[in-house]
Image 1 (spheres, rainbow, N blue to C red):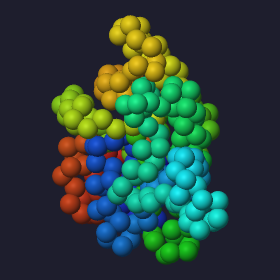
Image 2: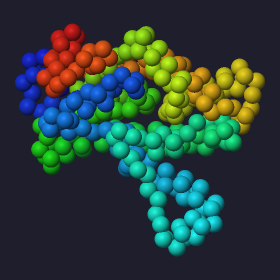
Image 3: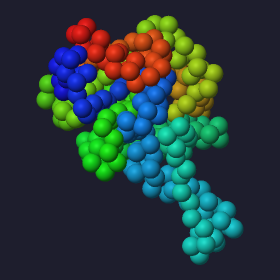
Length: 285
């Protein structure tokens, strides 16, 4: 690890951390506290995906939809207007809406073929954004003079790495740049995440083999064909399974760094608290 002891962590003039875990357990809370000190450069993987790697896909889908409207079609053909996704670190609705949900088109769904295409686009985009971590860590320090750096990853990072493999290229690169920090939730946190998701289901990114298995099982269990699937019903059905699928993958990633609990993160109020939290996590190893 970059910081093999708690003393090494506390003494480091340039701290670099990559935080990961299920969405909703405190990654953004932690990043916000650090960013607001003025000493930490906050690199949001989701923001990078939306602004750099998925923007053209989103724009193209909007243009395709607009071309079905005579007035907008003429405006676009004359280059009188332009379309662009509005992505913020606190609002990634453009990316989420583009990813969509599979099922009945009349109910707002996408065909499974289009859905898997967009899933693959997102996978490629997230891996590219993760590979940019070192660039932004250096940029934050040399260009903007931030002494410290935090990489705020998306919940799906665990889908694209094989962390039990000591030679995994992405984990090797990330851990050479930052200290990986897993925010671990318990059963109560998982239940709360499922409750929130059931209330307001949102698009997610899935490992291809996992998605194919869930889609096949859902069609079989409900004796239904793909274009009749209720998109929200499918993603609700899949969500708890996705959390169970991801847990051991996060666990495997944790051996590359340190682990803290979601409750510990929720109690953070300052950068000093964060330094203490990481130091204790290193001591627990």
